[in-house]
Amino acid sequence: MDQQTALEKVTAIIKPYAKNLAPLEEGNLDARILEDLGVNSARLVDIILAFEDEFGISIDDEAADKVRTIQDAVQVVSAQA
Amino acid sequence: MNRVVITGLGVLAPNAHGLEDFEQALREGRSGVRHLPRLEELNFSCQVAGVPQGYEELAREYFAPDRLVAMNSGMIFTGIAGIDCWRDAGLPLPDPVEGPVDWETGAVIGTGVGGVDTLGEVVFPRVKEGRVRRIGSTSVEQTMSSAVSGCLGGLLALGGQVTTNSSACTTGTEAVIQAWWHLKAGRARRMLAGGAEGASEYTWGGFDAMRVLARGFNDRPEEASRPMSASASGFVPGSGAGILMLETLESAQERGARIYAEVLGGHVNCGGQRNGGSTTAPNPEGVRRCIQGALASAGLSPDEIDAINGHLTATMADPLEVQNWAAVLQRDPKNFPWINSTKSLIGHGLGAAGGMECVASVLQLSRGFVHGSANCQDLHPALEPYATRIPHQTCETDARILAKASFGFGDVNGCVLFRKWE
Image (tube, rainbow over all chains, first blue to last red; front, top):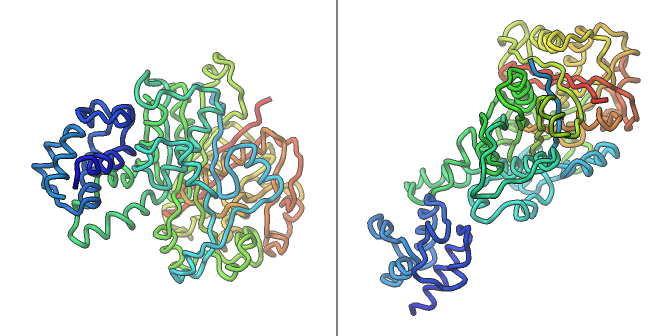
């Protein structure tokens, strides 16, 4: 899967959980999911599950813990998809 | 001790959303009971219920997507009624994330069964399948008993005591009484109080199995809820939320708030499941002591009660309830207070019932009417002596004092007394 497609899908998954949409709309890959997007930390669990469903992959806890930015998320899903 | 008044009301009921719509619905006898195809698919005997109509769309208007992902139906009903109540009390909505906490306002929002829809649809299936990880992060906050009050505390930045009470079908009325005690004692300036119950087949299934839900009216849903009727065949399950803003008189006057009514008194007790009482039936002495306790707390005599908004669910307990009122009030049947059942229009909201019905009670008092009690033209024979005091159509009245009671499984009772603010 190309990076652009992965980014679009990752963004669509994270969007409903974000209080601050601006970094997503700007396509800022360095935006931090918790601090910059204002996502409730508990919801990372749901975002990881949604990645697994969308991309047909399995993300273990160690890999999930490393997802801090949009770029991290794109890399995690691209690595397996 | 502080005097306590009501300065805000919010309601999301099966027949209406918002005060103006709810008043109109009560006045015109609009039923919110509908046939639910899902209950037919599931082979319920009772296939009708009261569910706030269009609530999913309302939820998208009221709540941001990141909050809505963790809200089940009971929380949605609470949030909508609570925000409406807050606005009605003339208070500004806080910023959703930042900004000050209101340290002087709390909430007692009860629920009878709670987030069983989340348990049934998300938690139980995944646990049984050995897929606990797939439950996700949102189930605990939706299934903890305090989900409804916790949700409202966050929406409104409440900093006082925020808690959930649960006492079956007495819940909503008990919440109002608990908030009244709290404010009387000077523990806060304002308390949101009421009840909420989600709409779920998992909640209603157990009642259907008990054979206490309405039978024989699946093709006539608006006629199914028949409190005080000779042909009452059980209650119609309902859902929704009703929330009142209780406030010390001093606080209300200080900020120039509009006042609907004063909470004059209230009492809650339990019949001990003895002498006719059981888990599912009331000990008559308990009911009578509860009403007497409410009158005593208000310093009222029985002849001062102008209207009663009864528990009156459409079961065999309705005539017993009226007998208990009569035993305490000792009034000639022709001089009996007006008595009606809001459940005739919205079904039995379980933990939400007392909340929605307290809103209906205060609305009736403050706007000078007693709504018609639907579907009891064929009055139960034991209630014939009171026929002239049971309105079938809405009447304009100058009622000043209204007694609202709720009774619940566990043999628990609650009675609150409101006086119109003049």
